Structures are given as structure tokens and as C-alpha cells.
Image: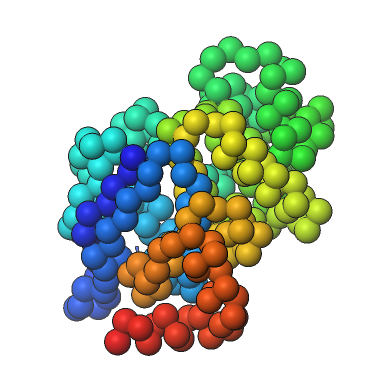
Length: 243
Ligand SMILES: Nc1ncnc2c1ncn2[C@@H]1O[C@H](COP(=O)(O)OP(=O)(O)OP(=O)(O)O)[C@@H](O)[C@H]1O
């Protein structure tokens, strides 16, 4: 179980401190599929980075299965079973797609095994398996390769930051199936930041974040109608609730 207690993240804005995350408390039960959504700039990516250890909270604590991991490094958290797929994936010059998937799987897998993970994310494996993870890959290809590595890792907690970004309409449907299958088959927790109704629709729970604060949490039946009914005005409305 992941638990955040009163997490804040402040940055310097001129002479003042700006609150990017403001008193965020959240519990994510094991094996749940939780979607985090909300207006641009609300603090979603920052929250994911704080969980993965890329940013350190200004105050508050983070617990994984009851252990306080707040001061743990990215590597320690990765070893404890936290995976993170970036909004804009990182490129690895000199490393092939197969190397990357093999590293993620943490065991010697065959080329056929690595290819299976690529096929799952809709990539024709033989076209990609020996390619370098460099700038020659398109944004959408890179994103799907990164998702394949997270599936291969099969960790306790998989964090995805806007996996839909840069994915074409045809591959998007496939991506929904990937997450649905992951949710059913992998015995881990999935935390996805997304603006996509179809991703929110397959989540067990939706968390709405705006202006650095959690505004709502609930099931999709509780949250989605309200979000969709207010399309275009969600941002302002949730901002208002904070006042
Ligand atoms: N290190 C930083 N220094 C200054 N401002 C920051 C820093 N990190 C984040 N911010 C600001 O904090 C706010 C939240 O950013 P964040 O990327 O977490 O939002 P988001 O909810 O993921 O947005 P989006 O939906 O557009 O991806 C933004 O206004 C961003 O500019």
C-alpha cells in the first residue's frame, strides 16, 4: 500500500515560496488501478515525481507498505518496486530496445520474450528489437517502448505520466487494452496520470488534483459524470472550490 501524508512541495518563485503540492494526503490500496487527473499545471507530474523520488517533498511523509521511504533515493525506490514512465521518455544512446527490455525484466529473456512485450504495446517487434533507443525513434514509439519496459518489470507500483501523450488514435485503443490487461494480470498497483476519459473509465478510483491539492477522490461513477458534465469549466470550478 502507498500512503502519502501531508505532502507539500514548494519552489522558489522570486523571493517567495510557491506551493506546487499543498498538503496532499492519499492512500492507494494494493492492486488498485488509480487514475489521477485535473487541469494542466495542477501538480500531477510533480506528485508522480515525488512518489518516484525524482523530487523530494518539502514536508510530509511517503510510506510504501508501512515503511517510510521519504528519504530514499530513486534507485532505492526502484529496488523496492516503484516503476515510473515519464511524460516525455528518456532516450538511451548506445542501448538497444532489447537491452532495455531485458534490463527491465531483470532476467535473461530470449529475443522472442522481449518481442512479446513489444507486440503487447502494438509495435512490430522485428522492426524495433535491435534498434537503439535514441533520437531516431519517434515520440510515440519511445513512449510505447517505455510502457513495454514497465510491463516487463512487473513491479509493486507502476506510475505512468500521461501514457496517451503522442500516441496515435489507432494505437490508443490498444493501449487501453494493455492497461486493462495489466490491471487484471499483474499483481501490482497502477497509478496513471491521464486526461483521457477512456483511461479514467477503466480505473477503480479517480483522484482529481488542481492547484496542488486533491479536490476529489472516488469511483469513476462518482467522479466522471461531474468531470464530463463540466467539460471546459473543470479547471475554474475546481479552482473556485479552493477559495
Ligand atoms: N521545479 C519547478 N520550478 C518551478 N515551477 C515548477 C517546478 N515544477 C513544477 N512547477 C510548476 O508547478 C505546476 C505543476 O506542474 P506539474 O507538471 O506537476 O503539473 P501537471 O498537473 O502535471 O500539468 P500537465 O497536465 O500540464 O502535465 C506548474 O505550474 C509548473 O510550472
